[in-house]
Amino acid sequence: IPAAVSQLKEAIVAADGVLLATPEYNNSLPGVLKNAIDWLSRPSSDIKRVFGGKPFATMGASAGGFGTILSQTAWLPVLRTLGTQAWFGARLLVSRAANVFDETGAIKDATVEEQLKNFLAGYVSFLRSRRG
Image (cartoon, rainbow, N blue to C red; front, side, top):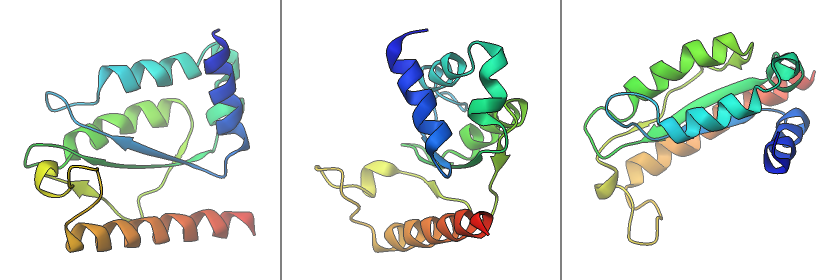
């Protein structure tokens, strides 16, 4: 296992949760990001330690009109197989991303910015509630 993979695994173990920001390619999840998750699940004996019960949320942006709904849906069986606790408290599906972000990558759409704030507030609230 490459050192970078081991380092990322330990970061996930130490984290309260994981926010998976995904693009959408050809109506599905991106191969490179899926490959990274596959590496993190090796050896398979480490899956429970790294992913078991870990709260995961998905969000994303795409150039098309569906706003990563298909990509986020495609992640669900993967996250279920790994034993994560997927958070479904809100959805963030940014479509037509070229119109939402400026040339520096900053959000220029006030509606999307508010949706992002609400999404993150909900996820953080969920994570805090798990601490007891």
